[in-house]
Image (cartoon, rainbow, N blue to C red; front, top):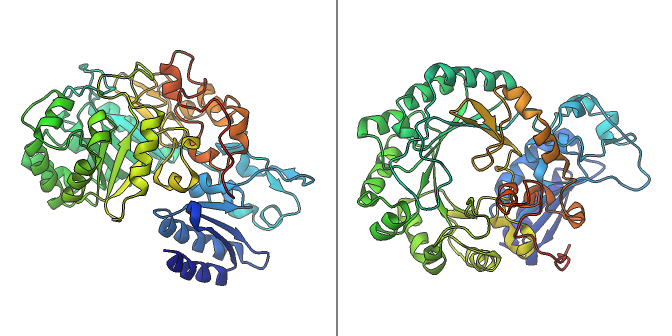
Amino acid sequence: MVACIRTVADKLEKAGLRVLINAEDNIVELSLRRTADPLKARRVLYGALNGLEPFFTVYLKGVPFCFMPDAWDHALYRARAGAVYARVAACAACRLNAFCPGLEKNGVFYTDLRGELSPVLAAPDELVIELTKKCNLNCRVCSSARRGEELSFRELCGVLRQAKKTGVRNIRFTGGEPFLSKELLPALKEAKELGFYTLVNTNAAAGGQRLLKQAASLIDNLLVSMQGRDERTESEATRTPGLFHKKLDNIRSLKAGGIKVLRLGTVISSDLLENFSAYYKLAGRIKARIWELYRPMTAGGAAGKEGFRPGPEDLKRLSRSLASLKAASPRVLIANPVPLCLVPAAERKNFLGAAFDDGHTRLVYDPRGFFKPSYYIDTELGASLKKAWGSRFLKTLGGFDYLPGRCGTCRDLLKCLGGSRAQAAASGAGCFAPDPWMPRQKPPADRA
């Protein structure tokens, strides 16, 4: 691997980039040389990120967030002592406005590249639409209330038009179970006609073969909930017997129908912790591109539900298991918020962090008729997507003033984001309290 990254580094350096490799901690730090053409280097940087991320934590040093707005969480950008900063037009719409110092007045980004900069997350990157609250399963750890609300096609079209006008790029349909909604197929067709990248979350145990085949051709990215490793454990987790093999058959049908990206998602349970290799083998047999593991987001906070009560030590053990994997496929990630200071720097490449939760980069539309920060935070942000994205709740979320002081100097702040706001609320202290898994003492400094 070191020889491989060295070859990549040589190519990057020829493009005017400086490359620092810390192989022990699986870290690559990239920055621009003064002689580099910034716009050419930016194209190279985006390609480098895509290639390096599965193997390293990649940092971009010295470039403002707006220079690479789709890679803002990689940027190490803080105010330098003695430097003078100024704001530009793009700053007004930038989600990181309260966190960013601005542009150095004597730097190339301010003097020559102001017209090439784009605000970070001027709109949500993704909108999640809960088509229905109905579900054919009764999963023990599910956060979705089994109610009867469903979204009408008329309301759905209105939400999609708002998303298009606001600048959203990705639309995710979920539930409950979206394949129980008669609006799923029309919703997918409408979303594709509007030019959205489409994602669907499903348990893959509902819907007939005809519907599955029709939907597959309209889905760009499919996430299948897989809570067991065999018939017995899947039945126990979902409290619905006899569907495991149907699920596997339906996954095959969806793949044959043209699904471009297949992911599996599993909530971390006692059984998974004790039988990780069996779950991993199942994910490999299904040939998922990515297998996502989730910290349980339960109303009981740290207490959780029987069989779904992992703690920080369990997370550390699971992280070590991921670090020991030799195969490249499927890629296994811990995909929702945890404080990253719980694990060594070398293992953090296997964490997605908190960006996709709590309202950081996406919102959820509830069939009761309002936008909310996430599946797990029911705070009503109103019926206007634009106003919801500019709400006081999300402005507070993006200011980071609620995080412990030591988070402000952490290189992984924009990936970790202080852990889970939903679990902070579930602990009884409110959304902007510390994550209950946040270490009380400052962890040892990572090797730079």
